[in-house]
Structure formats: C-alpha cells, structure tokens
Length: 243
Image (tube, rainbow, N blue to C red; front, side, top):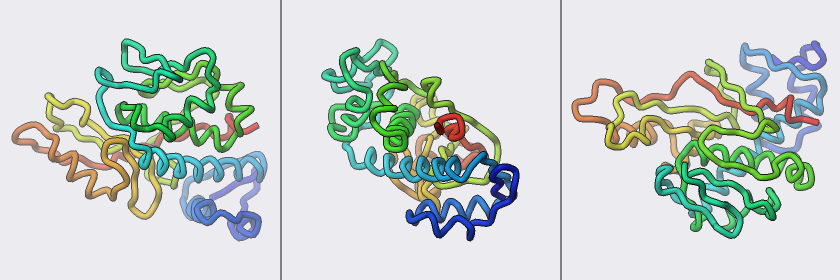
C-alpha cells in the first residue's frame, strides 16, 4: 500500500507520470505488498523510485568494471584517488572530488579489489551520485570513506526484518556452516533486481539457487545447514536523503 500525505494512492494514478519501466515495476510491487509505504509528497516517492533504479544501474556497472573480490587484508585501490588504510578501507584523498573518486571505481575497476560489503557501499554511493547530482554529492560526501558497512551520516541506512523485497534493496544470503578457513563466505550481500536476479560482488549477477549452490561449496566439512536467503532487508533511508 502507498500513502501520500496520509492518503492511499493507487499505482494507476501515478504510472502515467513515470517513464522508466523499472520504476513502474517497483511502484506496482509497492502497491501489491501489505506493507505500507508512506511519503509526504509524490516527489518524495519518485525520488525513491529513481534511487532504486540507479542502484540497479550502479550494480550492473560495478559488475562490468573488472573490480576484483578480495578480503580486507589484500584490498587495494587506485592510489591516484584513494589512500588504502591499514584496516583495508579506502579514504578519498583531500584534493579529489568525491564524484571523481567513486566513478573511478567503475571506470578503472581493475585497479580495485575489495570484499562484498564494501562493494554494496560503493553501489549505494554511486546511486546517490546519480540521484542527487554531482554538485550536491560532492558537498555531502567530502573525504568519502569506504569500509564494510560504515556509511556517511548523509547516506543513512535502515535494516528491517521482512520479505517485501523490492528491486534496489540490499538482501543477504546467510551461510551458517561456512568454512572457518574462508570466513569471508559466511554471507553474501546482494542487490536485488527482481525476477530472481541478484548482484553480489564476488559472485556476479545470478539467481538465488546459483548463489546458494556457490556458498554451499564454501562450507565446513560435514555441514548440516544450507545457505539461504534471509528475511532481512537493508535500504537507504530515502526520505531523509531526499531534499
């Protein structure tokens, strides 16, 4: 259900004003779920739809970039734009525009390697750039820091239990019997595209069965529990990001 200014709105009332096919699909799915999605204005809703479609665009671009998967210990980045810190995180150099630094990851992906949670953060920052525009992005995200699930205060992240998965959401595959010698495969964080398609850094764009089969090959000897898609959703707080 969709509420705008506390009033229920049917997707048919909005579809004529939306040209992007992915955004139309998201809108229809929102209306079909029992979950209530509330907005102050139509523009606030449209911003979320834009951000979600840009999240999928950014995920596709990162997937094609040539950036490699590795652990924090072996992470590396383009030294022209970023300083690689001792914990494996990347800190934007003080004389670099945040937009230039984040876009370099998809332009020169072969100069980068990181693990999957940092990959998700990169996707969401690129989506924020596409959605907010270069000028505002550069103001908000000076000295950008990329590391695991650590996000700038201007990109607030929400997490909730549920299965109202929408394209552009961050979802999580859990692997409870992971091989302790490969602890980085205890889970895979993914961008959901809809239609059983997910992007995870290190596994690419795959369906759920392929990701689960992959993680099941990374379990300890004599495992008892299969990897599985969790009923947990991570999303940017689109309403706080909207201006």
